[in-house]
Length: 189
Image (tube, rainbow, N blue to C red; front, side, top):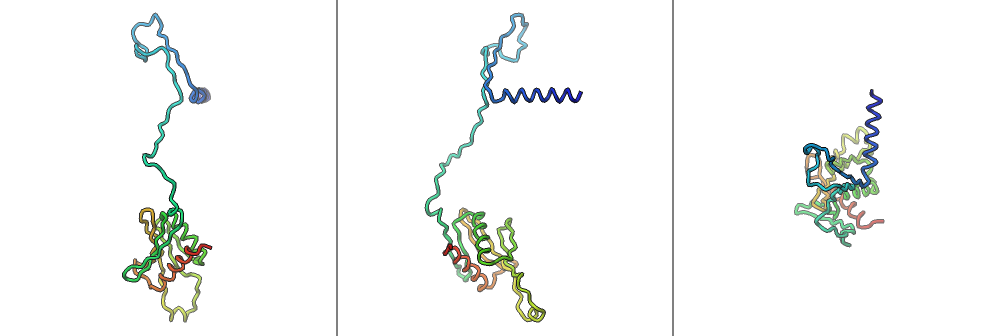
Protein backbone atom coordinates (compact mmCIF):
# COMPACT_ATOMS: atom_id res chain seq x y z
CA UNK A 1 0.00 0.00 0.00
CA UNK A 2 2.90 2.36 0.81
CA UNK A 3 4.43 1.79 -2.64
CA UNK A 4 1.07 2.55 -4.27
CA UNK A 5 0.72 5.85 -2.34
CA UNK A 6 4.28 6.86 -3.12
CA UNK A 7 3.81 6.07 -6.81
CA UNK A 8 0.50 7.95 -6.91
CA UNK A 9 2.02 10.95 -5.15
CA UNK A 10 5.03 10.93 -7.49
CA UNK A 11 2.86 10.76 -10.60
CA UNK A 12 0.66 13.63 -9.41
CA UNK A 13 3.72 15.69 -8.54
CA UNK A 14 5.34 15.03 -11.95
CA UNK A 15 2.11 15.97 -13.72
CA UNK A 16 1.87 19.23 -11.83
CA UNK A 17 5.51 20.06 -12.43
CA UNK A 18 5.29 19.23 -16.12
CA UNK A 19 2.19 21.38 -16.62
CA UNK A 20 3.19 24.17 -14.26
CA UNK A 21 5.32 26.21 -16.65
CA UNK A 22 3.31 25.61 -19.83
CA UNK A 23 0.24 27.47 -21.04
CA UNK A 24 -2.84 25.25 -20.70
CA UNK A 25 -6.14 25.74 -22.50
CA UNK A 26 -9.11 24.15 -20.79
CA UNK A 27 -12.40 23.67 -22.64
CA UNK A 28 -15.57 23.27 -20.68
CA UNK A 29 -18.85 21.98 -22.09
CA UNK A 30 -21.70 21.27 -19.75
CA UNK A 31 -23.45 18.01 -20.65
CA UNK A 32 -26.96 18.37 -22.07
CA UNK A 33 -28.45 15.94 -19.61
CA UNK A 34 -27.08 17.75 -16.52
CA UNK A 35 -29.73 18.44 -13.92
CA UNK A 36 -29.07 21.57 -11.96
CA UNK A 37 -25.91 23.53 -11.68
CA UNK A 38 -23.57 21.05 -10.03
CA UNK A 39 -20.49 22.33 -11.87
CA UNK A 40 -18.15 24.61 -9.94
CA UNK A 41 -18.11 27.11 -12.82
CA UNK A 42 -20.77 29.84 -13.02
CA UNK A 43 -23.33 29.71 -15.79
CA UNK A 44 -22.12 32.91 -17.47
CA UNK A 45 -18.48 31.71 -17.60
CA UNK A 46 -16.82 31.47 -21.02
CA UNK A 47 -16.41 28.08 -22.64
CA UNK A 48 -12.61 28.11 -22.45
CA UNK A 49 -10.08 29.40 -19.99
CA UNK A 50 -6.46 30.19 -20.65
CA UNK A 51 -4.05 29.34 -17.82
CA UNK A 52 -0.63 30.87 -18.21
CA UNK A 53 2.40 30.95 -15.99
CA UNK A 54 1.64 32.95 -12.85
CA UNK A 55 2.63 36.59 -12.84
CA UNK A 56 4.79 37.31 -9.83
CA UNK A 57 4.73 40.96 -8.81
CA UNK A 58 8.19 42.47 -8.52
CA UNK A 59 8.89 44.98 -5.80
CA UNK A 60 10.34 48.11 -7.32
CA UNK A 61 11.94 50.78 -5.23
CA UNK A 62 10.08 54.09 -5.57
CA UNK A 63 13.39 55.93 -5.12
CA UNK A 64 15.67 56.03 -8.10
CA UNK A 65 19.07 54.54 -7.39
CA UNK A 66 21.84 56.77 -8.58
CA UNK A 67 25.46 55.71 -8.96
CA UNK A 68 27.68 56.94 -6.15
CA UNK A 69 29.25 60.31 -6.68
CA UNK A 70 32.99 60.78 -7.02
CA UNK A 71 33.19 62.06 -3.44
CA UNK A 72 31.48 58.87 -2.13
CA UNK A 73 33.95 56.64 -3.97
CA UNK A 74 37.05 58.17 -2.42
CA UNK A 75 37.78 57.25 1.16
CA UNK A 76 37.82 60.28 3.42
CA UNK A 77 39.22 59.92 6.94
CA UNK A 78 39.08 63.06 9.05
CA UNK A 79 40.81 63.40 12.39
CA UNK A 80 38.79 65.37 14.91
CA UNK A 81 39.56 66.60 18.43
CA UNK A 82 36.99 67.59 21.03
CA UNK A 83 37.32 70.38 23.62
CA UNK A 84 38.95 68.00 26.14
CA UNK A 85 41.69 66.98 23.71
CA UNK A 86 40.27 63.53 22.90
CA UNK A 87 40.83 62.53 19.29
CA UNK A 88 38.58 60.52 17.00
CA UNK A 89 38.46 59.57 13.33
CA UNK A 90 35.48 59.98 11.00
CA UNK A 91 35.16 57.65 7.99
CA UNK A 92 32.79 58.35 5.12
CA UNK A 93 31.80 54.67 5.02
CA UNK A 94 29.11 52.50 6.58
CA UNK A 95 30.16 50.80 9.81
CA UNK A 96 30.54 47.32 8.29
CA UNK A 97 32.85 48.67 5.57
CA UNK A 98 34.81 50.76 8.08
CA UNK A 99 35.21 47.62 10.23
CA UNK A 100 36.89 45.78 7.36
CA UNK A 101 39.11 48.75 6.53
CA UNK A 102 40.24 49.23 10.14
CA UNK A 103 40.76 45.49 10.69
CA UNK A 104 43.05 45.33 7.66
CA UNK A 105 44.86 48.53 8.65
CA UNK A 106 45.50 47.31 12.20
CA UNK A 107 47.01 44.08 10.87
CA UNK A 108 49.21 46.05 8.45
CA UNK A 109 50.31 48.34 11.29
CA UNK A 110 51.39 45.37 13.40
CA UNK A 111 48.55 45.12 15.92
CA UNK A 112 48.28 41.34 15.78
CA UNK A 113 46.97 40.57 19.27
CA UNK A 114 43.48 41.91 18.82
CA UNK A 115 40.32 40.62 20.39
CA UNK A 116 37.52 41.47 17.98
CA UNK A 117 33.84 41.77 18.84
CA UNK A 118 31.97 42.63 15.66
CA UNK A 119 28.55 42.55 17.31
CA UNK A 120 29.61 45.56 19.42
CA UNK A 121 31.92 47.03 16.73
CA UNK A 122 34.85 46.86 19.14
CA UNK A 123 38.53 45.96 18.91
CA UNK A 124 40.28 45.17 22.20
CA UNK A 125 43.85 46.41 21.92
CA UNK A 126 45.79 44.16 24.32
CA UNK A 127 49.53 43.60 24.28
CA UNK A 128 49.97 39.89 25.05
CA UNK A 129 53.31 39.62 23.27
CA UNK A 130 55.20 41.44 26.01
CA UNK A 131 56.32 38.92 28.66
CA UNK A 132 57.72 40.62 31.69
CA UNK A 133 59.76 39.07 34.49
CA UNK A 134 58.67 39.11 38.12
CA UNK A 135 60.50 42.31 39.04
CA UNK A 136 59.39 44.09 35.89
CA UNK A 137 55.77 43.19 36.65
CA UNK A 138 56.08 44.57 40.19
CA UNK A 139 57.64 47.89 39.25
CA UNK A 140 56.03 48.60 35.91
CA UNK A 141 52.70 50.34 35.64
CA UNK A 142 49.79 48.12 34.65
CA UNK A 143 48.74 48.72 31.09
CA UNK A 144 44.98 48.76 30.76
CA UNK A 145 43.22 47.35 27.76
CA UNK A 146 42.14 49.92 25.22
CA UNK A 147 39.00 49.57 23.13
CA UNK A 148 38.80 50.87 19.60
CA UNK A 149 35.07 51.52 19.09
CA UNK A 150 33.23 52.10 15.84
CA UNK A 151 30.14 54.26 16.29
CA UNK A 152 27.64 54.24 13.39
CA UNK A 153 26.42 57.68 12.32
CA UNK A 154 24.24 57.12 9.29
CA UNK A 155 26.45 56.59 6.26
CA UNK A 156 29.52 57.60 8.27
CA UNK A 157 31.42 55.95 11.11
CA UNK A 158 33.14 57.55 14.08
CA UNK A 159 36.16 55.71 15.54
CA UNK A 160 37.12 56.44 19.15
CA UNK A 161 39.47 54.91 21.73
CA UNK A 162 38.12 54.12 25.19
CA UNK A 163 39.57 52.53 28.28
CA UNK A 164 38.07 49.82 30.46
CA UNK A 165 34.72 50.69 31.99
CA UNK A 166 34.09 53.54 29.49
CA UNK A 167 36.95 55.50 31.04
CA UNK A 168 38.96 58.01 29.10
CA UNK A 169 42.29 56.35 28.29
CA UNK A 170 45.74 57.85 28.49
CA UNK A 171 45.79 60.53 25.80
CA UNK A 172 49.25 59.50 24.59
CA UNK A 173 48.15 55.90 23.95
CA UNK A 174 44.89 56.82 22.21
CA UNK A 175 46.56 59.58 20.20
CA UNK A 176 49.27 57.15 19.11
CA UNK A 177 46.75 54.57 17.83
CA UNK A 178 44.53 57.10 16.06
CA UNK A 179 47.50 58.96 14.54
CA UNK A 180 48.88 55.72 13.11
CA UNK A 181 45.48 54.83 11.67
CA UNK A 182 45.00 58.31 10.22
CA UNK A 183 48.48 58.30 8.64
CA UNK A 184 47.84 54.83 7.23
CA UNK A 185 44.69 55.98 5.42
CA UNK A 186 46.29 59.25 4.24
CA UNK A 187 49.19 57.40 2.60
CA UNK A 188 47.72 54.26 1.03
CA UNK A 189 50.81 52.39 -0.18
